[in-house]
Length: 191
Image (tube, rainbow, N blue to C red; front, side, top):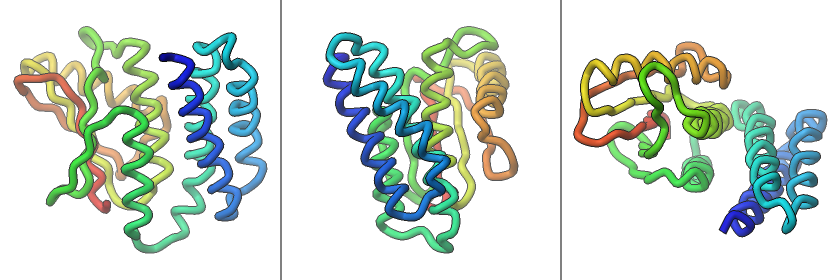
């Protein structure tokens, strides 16, 4: 149910906030995340939709606050890989490890024509926050759609949405390809 999802996401946000604090994240960067998590808790059980939105934003803010702490590390550890897997699983991504690093496959991050749907844009913002929170190595976004023409238009919309979500620079690339099923793959090459 929506209430259970909001509770789980709030708990995850609080866990990431406390982890960031324990690892030495700048306290001022965690204040908004903490306020959003408190707002999410206060909205339950009466307003699960509001709680879910606040919890989602709290988790994104906490992951952003955690990014500079993780960036100070020079090597990706097994713990870093597992943290990335845990963060991606919250989004419903299917996770695999292979010669391209860690690959997350996500359904539903498309829209119609040259625009992403609002829910797809929110999902992409979540994925971008996770990518920013795990700052090692390149991240390749591979968009698969039913035909090449749609794939090119959707890749353009994806690039714009990534830019809006602060996933910019040489670390982030977007590719498109025609495929039998629509999905987005994130390749975390260093993980």
